[in-house]
Structures are given as structure tokens and as C-alpha cells.
Image (cartoon, rainbow over all chains, first blue to last red; front, top):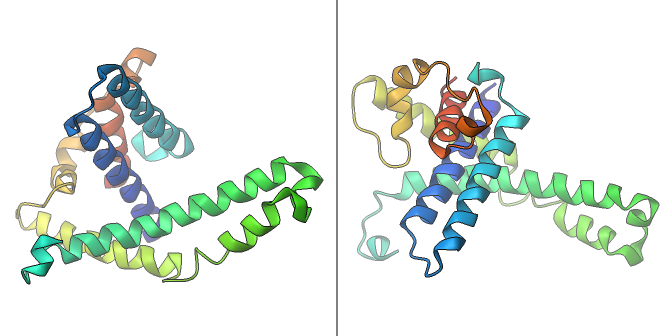
Length: 56
Length: 135
């Protein structure tokens, strides 16, 4: 129970840190940023597909 | 690093929490992925010339050494419980743990992510992950 809690917490923290780094980071080609946003979406959705019971 | 050199260790608990938790999470994912890759190669994955046997034997102790994953996760969890206590007293939480103090606000979100377009919104995904972690 405690381990499941901390795993989903760490996944959320990973998501937030990744998202903030992409948004704050300076990337010359704006298309790269959009691709990285897609990676953010995919990582978040993959995590939710694996375990989303608590969202309901 | 500059702060540590100056003798300021205020960020140490956060760093310990993040590093312990991420070590456990990343090494577990790595181990599962290496094993999946080995098995997806069929019987060849178990032959030494495939490279998977070396990879597997090099990777398999990582979840255990430098702190077993279960112990690392429990250490990481201890910090989260401290944050929950702080939040219940109304104290501000450091970045990126603010979501813990917004538990009621997050739980009140209803009816989001009902279409594909909505689920492609990063904010909706973020909130869904936060609600899952709050539970």
C-alpha cells in the first residue's frame, strides 16, 4: 500500500519535473518543443493506462 | 552544489527523497524492460552471443545494491508523510510537492478527460496523475 503510494507519487514528480524542464528550457527549434510535449503526453498517458483506478 | 559548498544543507531532504525514489523506480523499470527485451528475442535471448545474458547479469543486482528498492521507496515515503503532516497544519510545501496541499481541490475535479481531445491536454493528464497520487 505504502509502496504503491510512493510509486505513483514518484511518477507524478517525474512528470512534473520533465514538463517544467521542457517548458522552461530554451530550445532554438520550436518544433522540438512540440515533439517533447508529445513525449510528456505519452509518458503521462502510459502511466495512467497502467494504473488509473484511483482517478475514478 | 554551490549551496552545499557554502554549508547550506536545506535541500538535502528533498534531494534524498527524489534520489531514493527515482533510484527505485528507474532501476525497477530498467530490470523489467531488460527482461522483456530478452524474452522477446525468444530462445536466442538466453544464448550468450545475443548479449542479453551479459546485460541481464550486469543489470540484475542494481535493484538491490546501493539500497534495496523496497528500503529506498520506504525512505522516500517517509518524506512524503512529513509533507502530508506539514500540509495538514497549513504550511506551504516546496516545489514540486505543492499538489499535496491541494488534495481537496484535486479531488473535487469531476467530468474531465471524457474525450480524446481533452485527454491530450497536458493539464488534464497532470491533474489525473495528481489525483491518483493523492488517493
